[in-house]
Image (cartoon, rainbow, N blue to C red; front, top):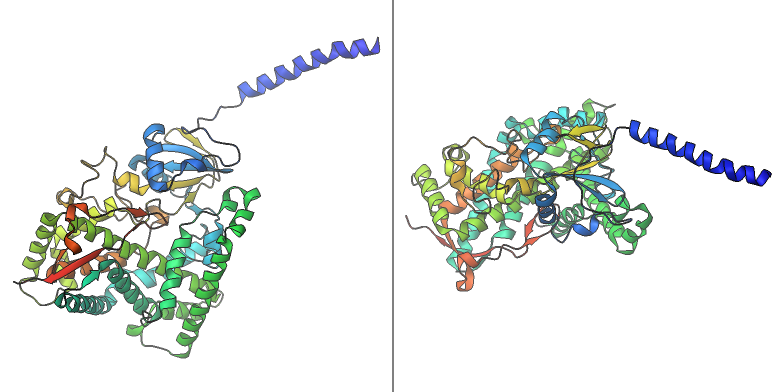
Length: 495
């Protein structure tokens, strides 16, 4: 009898629990999540990223929309692929999305992310951004290094002239890497380290590693793969080598004091450290992190943009000729282009904007992270969601750009669209609080290099290769590079 009673009570309790569950389910607001492709167990949507992540995400967005939710392992990731969605993230809700995700590779390479780009949003970031960055990258400071840029670009022109006189093939990829590295070394460290092949190698490895994904960040139970693959070992090796290099640099700077006009980035940060003993920058690691950030962001993206833009010009000789005619007209027979001439070169600026639009140096920008639950374009986004803005896809959006895959600088001649974070159709440097503060510095180099090059030389491809057949294959990474170096034969203009 007792057993029979229990058997009768069991269904009754089950029915009551079902009613309670149904009531709670109906009374709980249902989340309106962004569209999302089906995910696999454990890995989520990682299998859908493909070889070129920015292109794979663009393809997925064409099906699922400009705001799309993926899962990288256990981590929800919001993919932003339209100007409207980017404006919502980086302007309307900029504070909510101002944080950075904690990623093990930047942490391992840049002193626990003690830099500007990867550090979390908080007191440290605010102090660096508000007090240090203006001292390093203000318009006045950028202008003060004008002579460095003009000297180094003249050295580059002489190198190419020498090779042209001997009909030697010029590796423009190497030339652009060298000049950006030499300018940044002089400005940031006080002298060139071009002769130090190891330093350039470590910087190259640094940028390559920053473009890698750590499995352990997204699937902790598979974190051992990062050890077996050698990724963690590479990070430690590069971090150690760079730290030893910067230890020597900082020690040299402490032993010699300079006049204000001679100060480089290390001098400025050391002065700030001395004057603010209790500052968050009291630690030398912070100085190293900031300088390393400047190199990673400045040299690699700047040289990459030059390579892609020059490649596009070589593919379209008529466009190159229009640029050469403008530069020649502004120079009016001058032997040397100076930075005073650049403001008059409107087509030059349009060419660089078009190069940036087609070949955004950081196609996916640096990932953000939401700090609270919010809504974006009507969709629910949970706190802790990573956000990836596909600047590359936005720059090629057919709803924003006519013939988006064509290199056509004329599109920028009759528009005020710029890349400084106010026009979300073109955001290669990001926008809002976490936008890149070094835009002015990078553009000063790119404009001067390009103007001087086309002013002095004509270019053809070696071995009779046709311009329209120039290989434009990419290599994946945090910065998108050409797979093959840009090789040309240069000949001097005969005016």
